Length: 217
Image 1: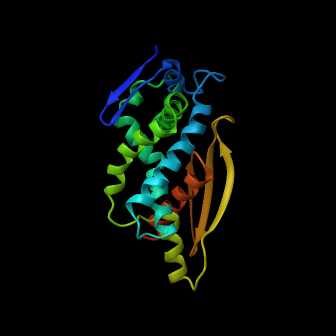
Image 2 (image 1 turned 180 degrees about the horizontal axis):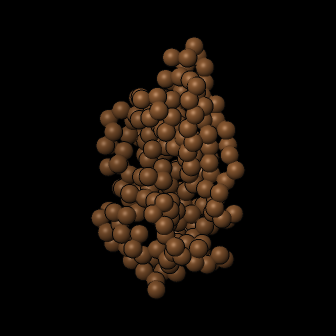
């Protein structure tokens, strides 16, 4: 089945080539060769640049670190999955077996793939406008730049452990080789925690968040 038009909330784009949208919503578990991974690769870059330009415009007085923290939050799996579910993409994705632990990851990938499909079909200006219309409201929700768990943990440990830093150890990935789950262990102040995620960065942040809980921050 092909959906030529997504018209929900702020997202409204009519595909000239509807098969691109169908491909964007096809997960690799369904078809190892004909799936959304390549479009996701493109969409990730289109989204990242569009959001970066938006933040540059919206927050002229913030430095690179503050803009980076905002950007990381706004292009995170959590945010992308929330946007995808708001658009109802979770009900349109062709997937093999969407377990509870993979729903956010699959939805986020599909959302990026849709942006990649729009870029291929309509060009960067069109894709950027759609992304900007959605993300402007998301970016406006936080008055101050957020700190991710890794940043919060590092600042806490440096302050309370004579300038020491958390130590991250990358463990062996698990799951399918084409779609692995990364695992990370972090140690600081005599405590250890582990986390997992779709990337090493996501796993590191998850591990830091778990250690923050142990340290009761």
